[in-house]
Length: 350
Image (cartoon, rainbow, N blue to C red):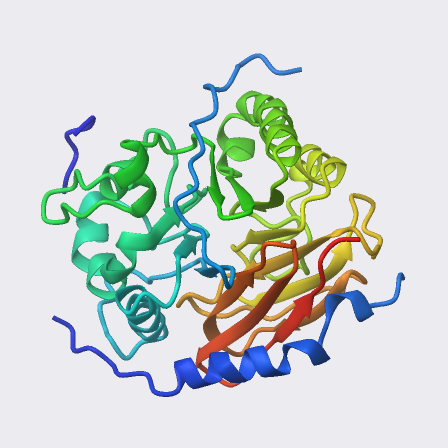
């Protein structure tokens, strides 16, 4: 371990998740994002970690995603967090997804090894074999305060030797370090938006890294997506507003025509129209999903941006997607505590 600080719940059977997803796919064609009308860095980041395609299926890449997962000292299997952890762990165990994308803020309030091991692992530990995680601010990482997330994901916290999928492939990934990975015909970059809070110079330098990374993947014929914690395309809540500091990253994403983004933080669910870097709905924009319904208390919305076309703040659950080789994708929100849903398809780029 790089650092020395270390500090039974009953399972829940969630019925109908597989059936719900089948219904989501069947209904997908009737709710398409395309139907929405138009309304100086001083620190140089480390070289990008090498990409490697380990996930390629004839039917497309199947992923699940959610953030803002587990409350302080919570290990109740029938909590919203427990229901989500159980459902996604079952998808991993039954090989029904190829990757679980963790969108940050895994364990509240402060993520030390002891908290991850005692609480998060009990509810979400079954997701680790297919977990690709993004580091995040506030509850996962504040330099000098809590820096155990990377140790935990690399199996270095006593009592939790399992490694996340990306760590099995790459070894230790420092908290705040960007990386990217190919999943079939798709290329996904994972960024730490915490850098804008704790090291803005490093965050600005990561803009150049992202530009190079996406350019290379696009030249190789990949379809592009980006994952980070703090949202840019989002409604305000009492807890958070829009993360405007991410604009340089958004400009790069638009430049390379990223197909979709995934973020969290707001404790609710949102989906944008295909949007450009000027907040306009356009046919070749990026669809921004904000999925922070992992288990924390939900927050209502206090603003209504015109680019948000679907949102709710009354349901916990997670997002499932199938990423097709032609650049099209299907999505469905799976409710686990509550009843709100979202489903749709986005066709291949022209």
